[in-house]
Length: 196
Image 1 (spheres, one colour):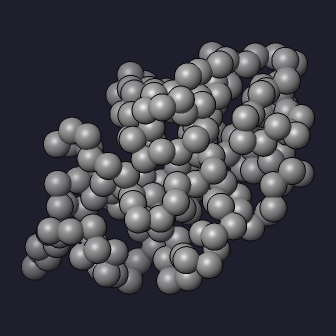
Image 2: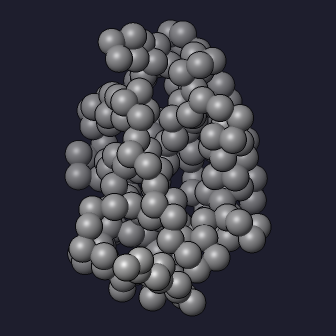
């Protein structure tokens, strides 16, 4: 007997849903779509970035693949939530997210999100265009794109309603407006991928 897929009228209904599994879902037009597991390469780069960031950011504020974020739906097929590869929370998130690691629209945005750009046109468009638009609409001040195929780290800084981007390669120091004391290069983030 096949079980009917649940449909949700609101994001709050979705948040109350529990299928008693560890699956992650995107909510699109009221329907659940299961997210596949992370690729080993994406997971490795996200974990490497976490390890580099916790030298200047409190460890409990840095989350990899586990923080769900409600985003604005800009087009009909956009998900209403995202699971960034890496999120740097604000201290107040630790107080207000006791029950579930979800940043809702009525909460302050995280300080920074990072995505490892996945191969393939559809994945690249999702990371470079759709998520960029949703993260800007959400008011996230800094969005990093780690692009192993191009050996570049792009730092997008929110200026008004849009991101201004700056690319970093090699041993050039990454400039982070949110974390000015950060001493990090693209090589440090991307070089570790040689071990994958």
